[in-house]
Length: 376
Ligand SMILES: [Fe+2]
Image 1 (cartoon, helix red, strand yellow):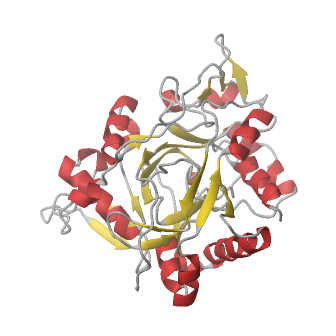
Image 2: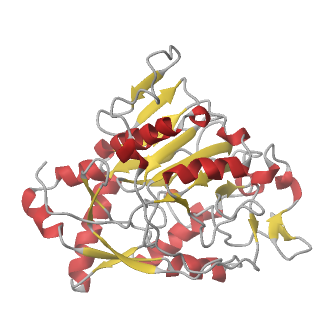
Image 3: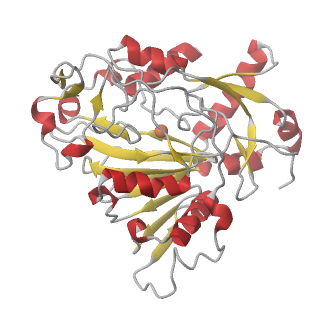
């Protein structure tokens, strides 16, 4: 599959952007904004429904100083996992990657608890928190909460709650689910591995996704461990990868939004990032490639770049022994570290009357950097 086709496939299933013929689902309000219409306005969380405002434009992002809150954390995590909390249950989903936590409320964490959350998520890669009440908090409160972890990112193309562009919405309507799934008419899989918005100069670190509504089963999110993937490589191949830079581009995403009637709120950007990046808290290396936004490796010829990127994409995509699968229950919040993982939504349900609705809080982190090669 060519890289262009791959981008088109990913865009076609990216529920966060406005694509295709959605005239049955969306209409325009008196201000010209694209809004949901018909049965899909029936939501328990109407203030989280997506709006696309063609009049909304933002200036290019500026650089900001970032210090990871995980650096301040007490490594024994006394505020996150209090010894006095008899309800606490922490389960590893796999030995090295992914955890599930019950018995704490993320909303009640102190500043120190949030620092420890950043550290815990950096160490585990992805953490599934059950029975959370973040969905019931006011949006301004949520944005203040997530700003502890970095500057809230405004997505250039996704739908957002009215007047809250910093909230990224994942939305697949009841009407879409109930109608024939046109995507699978010419595709065999909805898997689209990526890390979020890596075209930005400072891509996100600790990232939150909270479910508002979803099918009884299906719509899981899969994650792959790019840190353990780095560790699996031979020393010789690691040495070849160190020092390489990858070109990440947001242009195709913006074009896809424009071509399908969506909006582009900020002009797309392109940046080079190191192929191997160090995590600022754990100091561990991870492979940093992104099948959605990476285009080529600097200074390599096309076939050389395609071969290396293709190998890394396949390695991450096919290695079930590097992956976990996060299921969604009412109240689930998944927190992951975009610097040391890739993920994909799964579009595998079609029950009539089931929408999938989630909101993402996406704090931006440091500009990716690399240090000297390290032994593991
Ligand atoms: Fe994503």
